[in-house]
Amino acid sequence: MSKNEDDKLPFTEHLSELRDRLIRCTVAIIAGFLVAYIFKEKLFDILNAPLVKAMGGNTKMIFTGLPEAFFTYIKLALLAGVVLATPVLFYEFWMFISPGLYRTEKKFLVPAVFLSVIFFAIGSTFGYFIVFPYAFQFFLGFSSETIQAMPSMKEYLSFSSKMLLAFGFSFELPLIITLMARMGLVTVDFLKKNRKYAILVIFIVAAVITPPDVVSQIMMAIPLMILYELSIIGAKFFSKKGDAQEDPQDDDDSYEKKEKDEGKDEKDEL
Image (tube, rainbow, N blue to C red; front, side, top):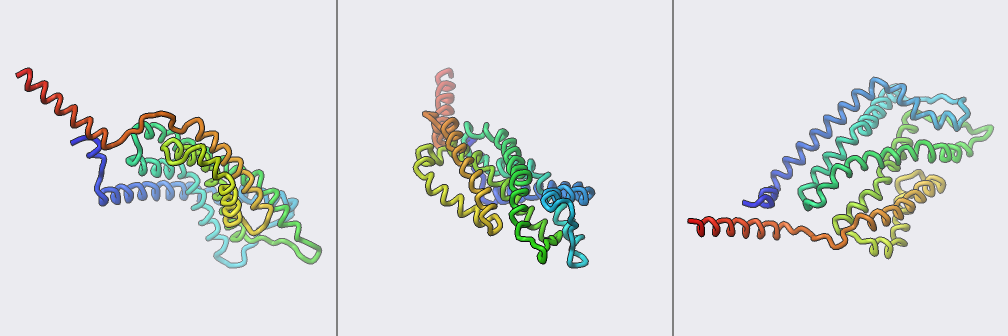
């Protein structure tokens, strides 16, 4: 039996593999959660820092329900646990899809795991240091002598976590498109030809995953458009150009042919 036939696992074994990988991901998230919960107050102060700075340092978070602060810290620790577990999560994801890749494509898995973490960190950092200050200034601009902003812990965590995760995952765009080009799923010409549709989709996505204000939408759409152009450059350098596309069936045929030739040689020697 050829190696490729061994790699073709039945559906039940794929489900079993998926279960095992999800269990490992869950364990990694729980471990990150336990570590993050120890530093929950410090983490919330760090998350809250851009808003405090935007309000001039004269603000305090409030909670309107007795258990709100407790559950907010739980959610924050869980979010931080997911962030800490991203290396494991990205590794398990890429390893799960690796059986569907060719041998020449599998060598990019380790760099893909590393770059996935890097791009996620860059996206979250961009949202925290660049987008948050401008977005908070915009929202606080509606305050007046009779209207004062009194953000609650629950609402702020919900807003900030969605923004950070949105920017973190959106910055994975160049890596995903470059890998798709490497696997032959898209081409540079296709990306250039459909640029206008990509821009439309980018603005739609930015409108859906950001708060309903123009500032946040534009501050997400512009980086995404830049990332799309970087994706075209990455696809240009890493797309397949004349590489022999490995065909699993061809591998099987060549393996069987080799076995027959070896058997024939043994008979000739006898």
